[in-house]
Image 1 (tube, rainbow, N blue to C red):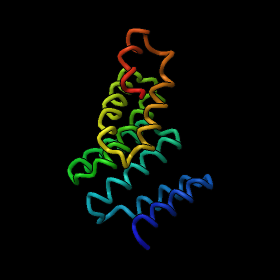
Image 2: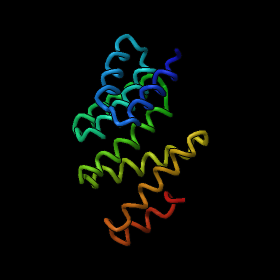
Image 3: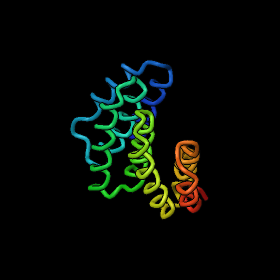
Length: 146
């Protein structure tokens, strides 16, 4: 089974609602992975950990994923981790941290047309924050929202 297949099977397990088993499989898969694979695994681990309600734990996984992805020269994984981390920060009510992170991610995503789906998701998330910021701030976002 390829690493991509392994991640897909773990995601499928999580979709059944069995987050604890999915997280256990992630932990069992992680040892010995090269950084480029470990970073992708950590993004999934961060997302699933957030779904359990452990937002602080999720942030730890996502920050680690970003650092590993940066070192492994995996901008796709780094940006996915960054957008996911912004979502977690927003879920924690930390909009002052989430909004700039999401904005920087959107700017970086524009250099990666292969990540257009993630760009659309990030822009939609930023739009959802419209009622939380001033009209002046909204005006500065116009170029980010496409």
